[in-house]
Image (tube, rainbow, N blue to C red; front, side, top):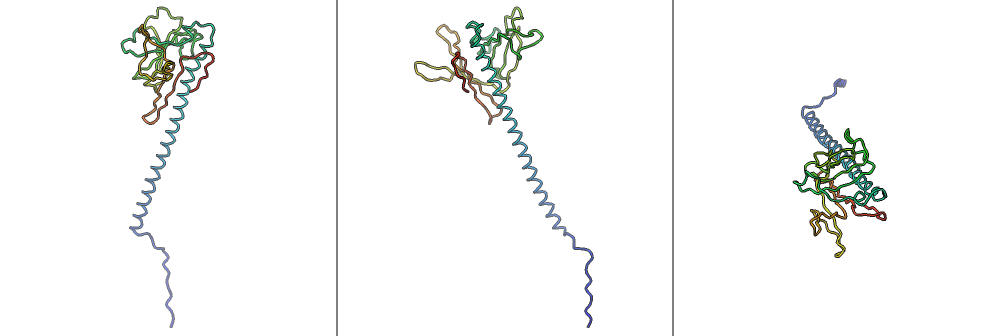
Length: 224
């Protein structure tokens, strides 16, 4: 008896509709989780870059003030009033009660140059504006009749500082005191704190506190 020849199917079996639907569903899950992972990874890198640049910004602001203080203290051309910072509220800002720290730049400052102030000795008042950040009101010796802040220029130093504190050392108690307001002496005059603490805030999770030493001399070692 002759065996009947087996005829092979020239076309392979295709996917069923159920298999196709399952493949699409699995691919969708992979794409969804994969995209979420990539987005999360990218956000993580962005946050890291923001944090790194934020750290560099904070360091730059601190070095700026530290350099001014150190340079002025070593400058024999300056008298005591210009060598050290002191608390003063410029005329026109008394209504908001914010304390300002006055700095003197005997050789000028690259930050404070304008058409009216081409350079040279400059006086600047630094304070915190709760809506904008750390600001400076300033003018050079070239200007005449500077009576109020309306006669000064205004520069935003950093938008990340919205709060600060004043640190005093109590020699009798031999301890440091952090206060929200400037102390006054028996005559009602503001007392320069030993340090001022600035809080740099990038977000609710990322913030850095830095202390600037205001009372120092030639032998001080600056540690932050």
